[in-house]
Amino acid sequence: EAGVTQFPSHSVIEKGQTVTLRCDPISGHDNLYWYRRVMGKEIKFLLHFVKESKQDESGMPNNRFLAERTGGTYSTLKVQPAELEDSGVYFCASSRRLAGAYEQYFGPGTRLTVT
Amino acid sequence: AQSVTQLDSQVPVFEEAPVELRCNYSSSVSVYLFWYVQYPNQGLQLLLKYLSGSTLVESINGFEAEFNKSQTSFHLRKPSVHISDTAEYFCAVSLHSGGYQKVTFGIGTKLQVIP
Image (cartoon, rainbow over all chains, first blue to last red; front, top):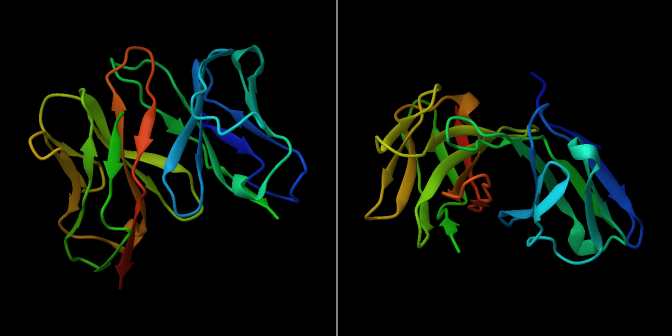
């Protein structure tokens, strides 16, 4: 079974530009999550999809961030326009119901650097 | 809201010595508890989890953690560390929420095993 994949692994952009991050969850996982870790800080929840619907987007920093999940499969996270404080590692995770608990499987992350 | 405190940002330890990584949490409701590990240049991996039952949980590579409800702690221990244990370790909690598992992470502890 393939794991969660994320693309790109690293992105360097200038302030004001647009970047789109992609996440491919494990096949059959209805739940998809985005998290972010700013350097030196905790990994923080951004949002949660159940299939193609946004279940909880309470962690999204502001309206410069837009997440979509086409057809309930892969997801994209767009940052437009990017600011310096958006730099960090963006993790994607997916899960399905398993034995009463919902173990999340994480991707390797996308390191975003805004200069 | 729940929170996780990892008091030690870095823990250096000699190879074959014991180690304890501390984790305390705060929550007004029951939670699941997790330890995730991130090896260099890799994604987050679930190391072990406490859902219910026995308060002592073990991983396949010799780590163990004990849930202490009265002290709201979930410390991670290993009696003898190996060089390959060098990684960053994250304590995390999630609510007992049917169909949805938003994870709250601690800031992480970097374990440096010294030869």
